[in-house]
Image 1 (tube, rainbow, N blue to C red):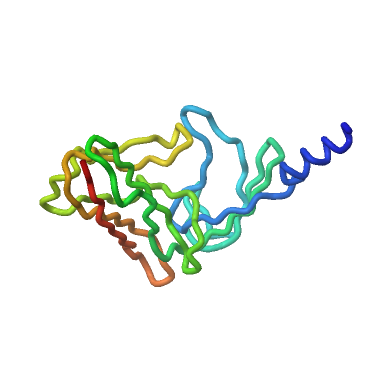
Image 2 (cartoon, rainbow, N blue to C red):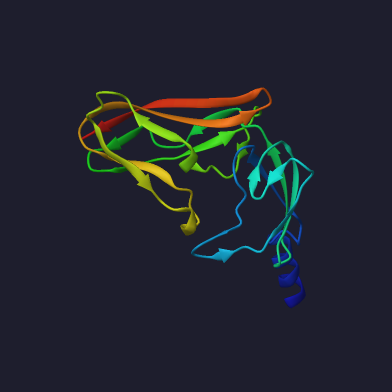
Length: 182
């Protein structure tokens, strides 16, 4: 019985297999935080792919951590933004304007690094107030913009983020209306 339990636990935990992740060129690798301290992980990448923890170009990055966890990170150009916040809310709700960077195949690129994005409310928006930054990288969550649903109505929320591409720098843009109800 114990033998089978150990095998089940190893299978459930991935059996020591390496992790794989995708990151957007122009974003940063997680190397620790003020709250958790340094991760002490090491990154190995071809010349020109990394500058410290900033990803400069597409390529494969190997991460090795003291815990024994290894991760293969594919760095690639982001193609578009996928908005992940609700399209409706009720008056009094707190809205969290999170988004994901995606590649041309619509695969999620991590981390989101929402603090790199510029979140705006459409001019004349009266349904949503107090746009402000929330969250913190040190909590293990990406910082994000948030606001209060103040009155019934609809406001367009847009997010722009400037990132490198093969042809230079490009501003990715996404927008969606958010309807506030009583």
